[in-house]
Image (cartoon, rainbow, N blue to C red; front, side, top):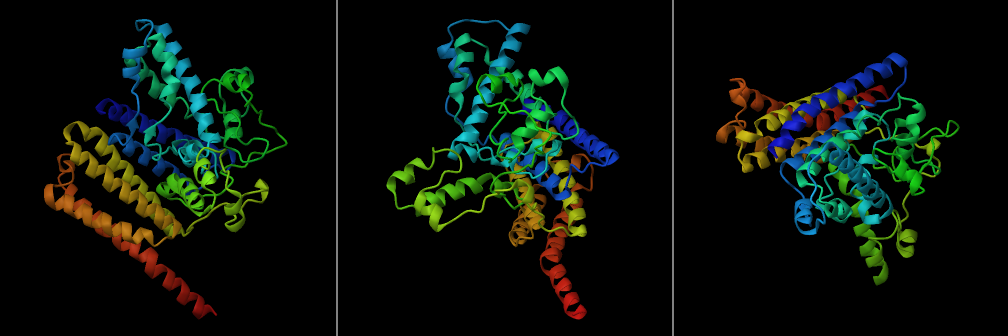
Length: 423
């Protein structure tokens, strides 16, 4: 875990710099690729995924190390060719796990967060799940285990393979010549994120586009069909926790409501979006039929709220960075408490971005929990970096609660009174 935290402490600043560069180039070109609250939601989603990993919130049915020890037919030493073979093997497994996530109703809940943004930019690449608690695709790694690929090789190559999928989430790079025939390019991945019928559920590959061409899931980006991004059933929230579980909640409701015992069971493993006939009639769901008529979700677009939300995101990133660089010096309970605080904070300010009353309750819990931590033992050793850390945290916690009260109670009433006076 410490190795992973160290890797993230280097990767995260790199991601942020690239997001800022993309934003700067988009402004220079006069192309709008970012919406403030959407970007905040995307980066916050990436943080929640990191927090899940830091506390080990996942269940592995069979570890790769166990499979190598018990299934390997060969014994292979670590050579450059082995690393390349491992990269290709992981990409092949990634293609199929990605495809399963798109085509099986239950498994779509593991992936909906990544497609939930109605924009397409580097920030949306950070929309990673917290709902995939159980690692169910272990069987896809059996071929690597049979070949005897060492576990330490997989452990090194896997994060490289994952981070290599970041760069192509952009609208600023056009088609890339001969590379279009070999690797996944921004053009290919724009198709994958689009909800246009011709693009839907295409281009599952993560690095090598050849998998899609081999298995019949490739679709070229067409100039005459501009991509529209998001999901067919808009999530209509900036809160990554709600997005992560809303599809599962929908399946649960349908399974409960249908009178057919058979449908109660099969709904989980039918194609994504399948619903029992009786439920579909009684509880219709509005899906996007015409992508070009889609109205994007806006949430609360108050200019002051946007500024405050950006401030909350910056504070959250700084605190998470402190957690990453301090994790070797913190006990497991401290790590859990730190991640829990950050999770509550993200839930609070993203709910506020939605204008939801949940934000006020979450802020109260955050205030109470945060004050307890500061008073009990100080802010997880932050005072070692600067002496006023505990005082600063108390001021931040109180200010965060008070400002949330303002946006939830005071500002709406001021606006209502202003309208009455104007009338």
